[in-house]
Length: 381
Image: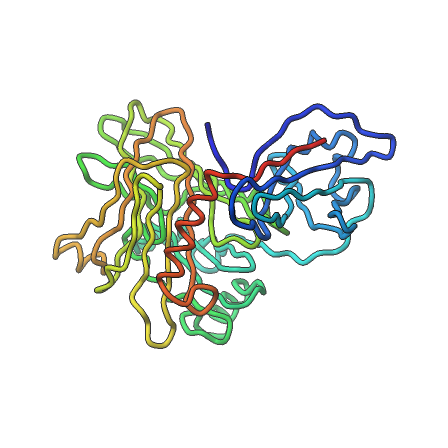
């Protein structure tokens, strides 16, 4: 059974009244409050309210709630539900209020085909064909920290590329000071052959499927890899980020793979920092980068909606340390079974916004891993 945080699709039959009103209850079976969590329902459940902009969602006090219709025909909206509690919403015909866009991303062909995206908490990027053609090696995900809810990535690129003002320095809203290099960076995955990572290079093609106001989704395909005797293994990633979340959800599939193959998900280890936590049975790995005297501390984590086979820190040889400018990886090992989807979450945080110490970050990662297994229950009445 696949579990997804904050999501329980309840395809229950119901009768839509002449006023076209739909009642929704959201139950929190966990012992902690769930605040600003994005839930979703199938848009077909709205039966007569199918078009974005033709209906509104209101809470029990009659206050409008922002929502988004996604590419896969779901309605997503934020909820706050007390521990072991229930709250209600009503969907009805009406004109939505104007809400801020909290999630946005795009490809930046002017910067070697980067794809960068962000929400009101944090920003990320991955690298594209032009960077690969340049010969630079960067396999993993990048984290751009921020300490404002504003969308800042577009302006950071503009200032860097047009005005020569680098985004590697904090000008008041955060910066990019994470080093990816030829590693898995902030939580990428790689198939393994004979205990060796087969690093995925930059994406080949992309399609942005959702672009705010509450969810960003991009579909990526990668160049063929040779995995054992399989000569044409093509990876597809479906990656999404919701408003208010530190976490990206990513679903991997590998076409052309003929048999079960080991898969490792990793976080690069930088410098002398060995500050990490990992738990295979609870399904998470978390790491704190070395403290930067000017910029504080950056954190990364990966969380799985299942137990992984093993977690461990694996260090590079001296030669690899020099080549990759890193010490190694914290890895979570699983198996990929052909014809299935492999879903997990990866994300980051910053000591200057929300997580003063690595202890705070590790507690947050562990709590998130527990939430995955106790999703909010959404019922359409």
